[in-house]
Image (cartoon, one colour):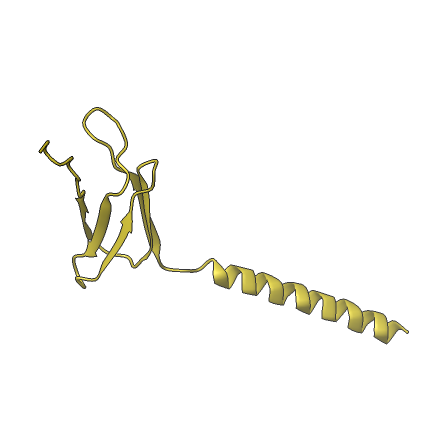
Length: 97
């Protein structure tokens, strides 16, 4: 009887430690993210802007497009120095005929 109790406590402890190890392993990522808001000089947000972050060391680029609130997020960036560029495609109304 004592052996079973000791065994069940040991298994519970082992399961708890394995769970903690798995959770901490998931937290040890080595990537970051770039988040921001694109706005004009008056402070109005600009949706639909393509924002590109290019790693200066590897020349690897990742892009995102701003949402309706002007916010963009580029996840999973490796550590390094980045150049950030934004491009806004403006559609102009057609001139009167």
